[in-house]
Amino acid sequence: MAARITDGEYHALSELRYLIRRFLQEGDATARQAGLEPQQYLLLLAIRGLEPGREASIRALADRLALRHHSTVELIDRMEAHGFVKRTRGREDRRQVLVSLQPRGEKLLEKVVGQRIVELRSHGRALVESIRKLLETRPIGARQKKRDMRVLRDL
Image (tube, rainbow, N blue to C red; front, side, top):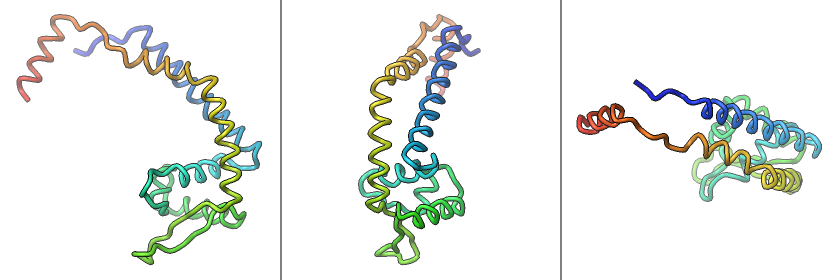
């Protein structure tokens, strides 16, 4: 039997969800103030934020944005028409389409990200505290310890 969820855990999870939603809504507003739609900002961030060595292919961007391939292509079409991004073919695989930031997109992204980092640094501690509360371990009763030991032994 699983341990009973405490009132504190319910509160911490509720608070975490609230803080995440507020952070995301503020990010959408910041993007709009800079002249970008939230999805456009997220695309620029996904391109710039890929780990070193990973190419910004349509597939990688669709994955990072949790969008379908065709929706990502449509978003890139609109962004390319505004001069925010540029498409090129892969060097090794010419079928692969890679997306890169144009100076205009880089400039807007830097503006939005700069504001987001300032906001996160001023309000981020509440997010961290909510996560910490959820990750704290609770004391385990003797009965639960025995069950856990049996599960480990049977592995």
